[in-house]
Length: 418
Image (tube, rainbow, N blue to C red; front, side):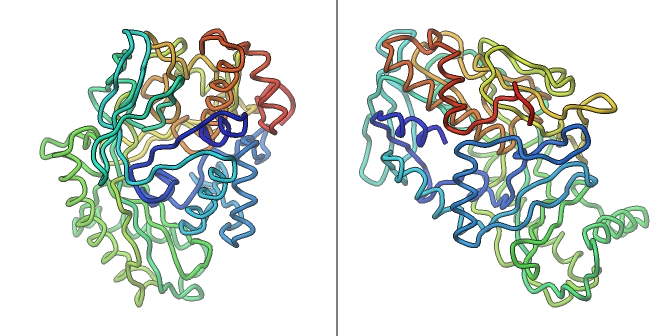
């Protein structure tokens, strides 16, 4: 979204991607579901993330890659399932159609600084060797705040990180035999097995849901940890290696239980295990505003809003998932996202978007999901272009003009009826 927005403003833009495809957690992480596009607004389920997100959904629909939005988290909010292969192509089309350049199979490894406050280049490694990508503005959408950390931006790392997962998909489900809401059956059977002492599962509250074709289901029920019980750290290569090995073992153990115990799954099989561990939290930069859990739960407004977030707090703690919903009997259901949470301290030509933007751990437990990340990305790409147009710093961007540009491009900022 950041690269598309910047390129559409006429700016020379390069997106550097370590894999051979786009989509991040949605593809490499195997999520296959956009969370956070919707909110429960005064009791009604409403899509609240628009703009470039709408264009992506339209491209996916043309590829027959979308399911109808489905209820999740105890039927409290909608999520949007999609076909992973279709997403890869739709993302290609969105970014290249905007005129942005792509560099696949390249990984950022360092930065070169002009001075303490200015990045001159990002150093990358690829099969072609080492190179440097120079630019006037940089956007860190790495998820781990890699560029920001190398550039000296202050960041936080929680003493108890949120636990990662390994996603997988099951095919060959007998839909008729599975009956209605078999995910409830899976959860009940897991609870009964644990109470009987026959099984121990790494986490409670499994998520098992049908895909575009109901013969295929996605499964999210693993939890990856170190020997001492702490969460795998996505910035530590040895821990990541442990997580991949442990995750695949957990996948097969969980699948065997589902196959052997759940009606309709007796002839099913694992069709895919995600190419990478699904990391939820590592570094979080310290920006001009730090989004908090109270900001989320109290549906707070900000004068520099650049989009909204309607997802509840979803904390993946040891052994389970804790959910906290927006407060109030007739909640508006979403908070605004301030531009200031994208502005890291100390470095002037850098914006940070996604799960490593400026948030507390519990604020991030809500706003790390896809919908608000899409909103942050579109805002960052637009703000970068405006700063270059006006010859201003990123902090000097006219927020009113930024908001006007975002509205003109279809974004919903939360300052009018949803």
